[in-house]
Length: 323
Ligand SMILES: NC(=O)c1ccc[n+]([C@@H]2O[C@H](COP(=O)([O-])OP(=O)(O)OC[C@H]3O[C@@H](n4cnc5c(N)ncnc54)[C@H](O)[C@@H]3O)[C@@H](O)[C@H]2O)c1
Image 1 (tube, rainbow, N blue to C red):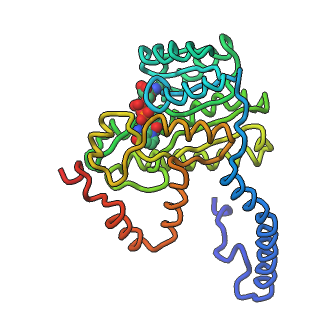
Image 2: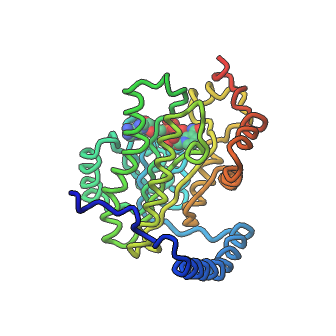
Image 3: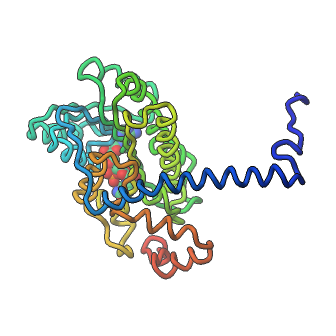
């Protein structure tokens, strides 16, 4: 074991100015290369904002939506069906999943409901085999099932924390891991994750929820780059979605009584997300540019960020925080 130890002097030679200068110029040349190649990319990005890219054709494709029985998942399913996409709803709430499928079939697409707890690896594995056999391969996978948990850390029980991590993080990993192999074989697919504004902006009154959504953003960022590294970058797309609060659930609206900024409607949020997916956007914020504002703020010292929290976001004014 002693042989495995790394000498403290390993890495760049210390106190030798020559190699350091050479290293500096090599990195500088790489940076210049990035700027030269990045110029046209930035130009195209701005152009895409002014004149958005065309939506891809998903007619006849199969989209699987976890947690698609209710709320945002249901609304995304209805919009994808408007584009001719066939849908599989996977949810623990079978009754609502079947109701959503009835509504989807009215749009002349095929729709199937499965009752599965997506936080169970084994159950998702069995589900994947069933879907592949009964319906066919999944083209668009939307990890959406999630638990919302707005409270201070001390109020979260061990069971609640475990459940939150199981559903909000592990289910995204399991479902992706299981369906990705088939996508790699077919060299085609799209993996979507519904994260949250909490995935980019830590919320003091939702510490554990923030933690799970940061994990989702990390997972999706790393997965996107893994696929690019392996040569699947153009074949298997990824989209990580960060929405602000949506009026899907009573506990959300009850908690956020008189929020600083108005809650989004489910219809509007689903429309922005589905448009982003159909444009192969790697990240989607709802409303658009929300993430840009947050990321810009994060370059400032923490004390300035706290001034923004206190004066602009007014977190301390939330009804449930005061209560
Ligand atoms: N509502 C918001 O303000 C908001 C904001 C940003 C992000 N989000 C995210 O959007 C996603 C959808 O949220 P929503 O507001 O539509 O919630 P919702 O409660 O209306 O819908 C979630 C669905 O997931 C299902 N589900 C829960 N656990 C499951 C499990 N283990 N296996 C299978 N299905 C399961 C539920 O039955 C339900 O149908 C979540 O990931 C949430 O974190 C919500």
